Length: 423
Image (cartoon, helix red, strand yellow):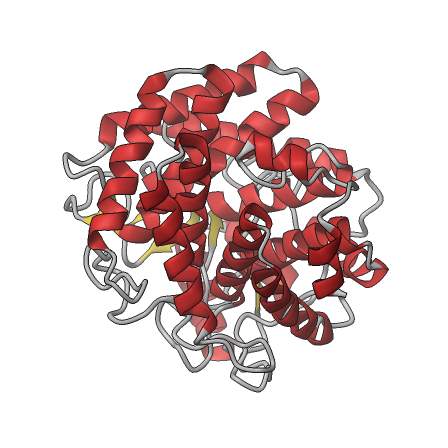
C-alpha cells in the first residue's frame, strides 16, 4: 500500500490537488476527529450530500460517487453520472428521513428518484448495469435494488405506475432464475459467473414485492434463492460464492448484503432458520470488530482479515444488521457494537470541507486509498450510514414493506417461537 500511496500523492501533488493530499495524509497518519456532535448532525450531513449528488446529475437519479482524484476506469474527476442500482435503494432512506423530519422537499426528491428509475427501465423490465452512459445491459442485482424503491414509492403515494414497474422487474427476475434458485442469466457484465450469495438481497426485494402484490411467483422465487444461499453457509457463518471479485476473501460489503437479505427474508416469512443463519454471521462479525469499532475490508473462510483497510460501506451495513437483531432479541452486545461502528464512521465523515462532493459524504475505504471505492465518496456508503443512524434513533422502517414494519416495530416484539430460535 505504501507504493500506491506514494504514487497517488505524487501524481495529485503535481496536479495541484491539495484537497486529496489533506485526506490522504489524514488517513495515512491515522488522524480522526473526535465525535462530539449528536449523530443527527452526521445524519443531516449525509442526507445533504445525497441531495447534492442528485442535483449533480440533473436527472432525478443520484450520482454514483464523487471522485477526489482521477478515476482510472471512468476517466474523470468529480461527480459521476447517475447510478440506477443504488438510487433505487436510496429511495426508502429518503422517505424515512422525510417522515422523521417532516421535510416535504426530501419526499419530493424520493419521488423524483422513483420517476427517474421508471424512465430508464429497460423494455425487458430489468434495470441497467453500471452508470448512465455505459452500454445498456441488464443486471439482476441492480433490478432487485430498484424494486425496493418502487415498492416504497407505491406504498407512499398509491401511484400504480410504481407497482407496474416493480412487477415488470419482478417478472424479469423470476424468468431469469434457474430452478435451483440461482441467477446465472441476466447478470451484470461486472458480475462474476456462478452463484452470487449476496443476491439474497435481491430475493428480499422479491419477497417485498410478493407481499405487496400477493403474487406467489415472487414469494416462491425469493424463498428459492435464500434456500440456495443457505447451502453455501459454513457452520461458522461465512458464505462461499459471495464476492464481486474474490470468493476466497469476500468484501465486508457483500457479506453484509447476503446477511441482511437472509435476515429480512426471515422477518417477512417468519422463518426462524433464516434468522438463525443471519445471526450466525452477525455473531462472527461481532468477534471481528476491531478496538476502534471498524471491521476489515475482507475476511477469509476462517474469519481472518486479509487486508488492513476497512470498507466503510460494509461497516455501516453490518451496524444495521446488529441494530436489527438488537430490536428483535434485545441483545445488548449488538447495540454496543453498532454504536462503536457508528462512532468510527462518524469520526471519518468530513463536515467542514468547502468541497460539496466531500462534505457530509462517506468514503469507500479507510484509509481513503484502500482498495474499495478508492479515493471516492460513494452514494451507497452515505445511504447505509444514514440508514444506520435512523435505525439507531428509531425513525427508520426496518423494511420497505410498511405492513411488515408494523409487525416488527423497532423496539417491539416478534413471534416468540422465532425469538426462541434466535436465542
